[in-house]
Image (cartoon, rainbow, N blue to C red; front, side, top):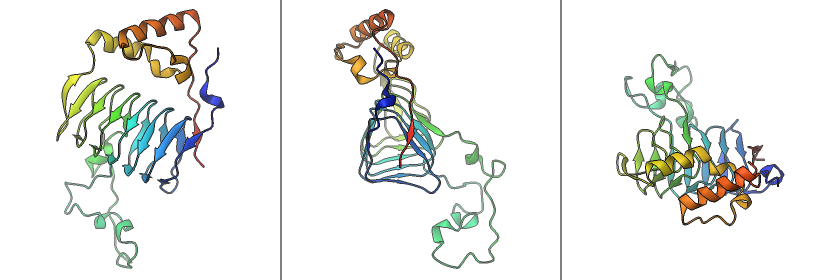
Length: 233
């Protein structure tokens, strides 16, 4: 049976405020609740919900089946730390555009040569990630599949798949599952499938759930739902 999600065109995002020239692509269903500011173009996977307020900066993608609590500040823009000042007056008029102070002012463009933060790769948030309330993810840090970020954490470096991290800065507390189970999860990539395909799995017993899913895959009963992104309007 074909469980493709391409036929679904449902999303809820009444409070989303994308920046200028920002394209928000989604796989339905997604639920974006409350005030959510999105500064860069992004792809959001199916069955993901984000509860605002949230500020999403230099984030390339958020995977499927993610659960994101209020207060996320993901990949905010950095200030240069090796310049005369950390203030944006040196390179941008945006913060004080209401005034005419910038007339005739010579700005210094930020480049990869004069600002190391410009070399950071966009942040990615994997599939099945749970992010608690009030989490900050710094530019360049990415979150692996299945990871859990505890409330109030400040993530300064990339988080391994299926790690539980907490603190300021965030550190690995423990892994969610034994190594062999994690490997099996990453190989199976259960998030490839529509929720209806996963119906009836023993969700509270991950190892058994994977066995049942692999059996469905082998028999052809479980058909992968390929990515089917659409732009929010």
